[in-house]
Length: 237
Image 1 (cartoon, rainbow, N blue to C red):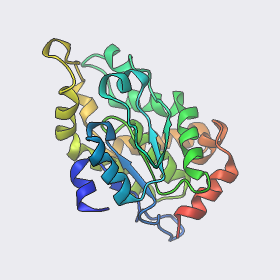
Image 2: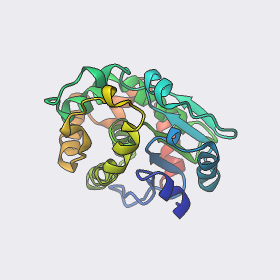
Image 3: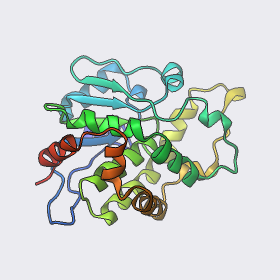
């Protein structure tokens, strides 16, 4: 990943290098996760797309978020809008809300959208691809964790990647809150700005117990098993 791209989006990273249990690694330069491209000027967003040679973008934000903070419209890459969590969700939570409840809801209630995102990435010619939400932590983090786990990536690498998002949250939250007037500022629970590795580890254990693993969870939700195998063939070396 180029310095320019990484400097524009604090939670942008290449998922290349993640290790699988059978000794392979995710190839670099093919799969990226990020905070929201909508925060960038069109020229800057286009530069990121060009530098990373992106063919596919997946926007996981809700329709309400896109209305408030702007659509991503770029020439070149195929853009897929697969909203996860209704836009009113954040308006309904209070300071006592728990991050594990929200992430569990994403995993087990929004599974069809997660499966659809993986199906998009598995399509011939889709890579390099990038997926994003607003902060690039929760919806993007869950999709990353399930996808990497389904590919056979070591659990330690999966949870470590999730935890990396916490370091970017102060900068991301400042940019997010700039979209609101003082009287409209959302009351975001303190727990929601965290990204503890152990939490993602516990959630993946729940996936194992309830669905037999991330791969079966996604396949049961509509992902073509052959598509997952094709994606593994493209990403792993």
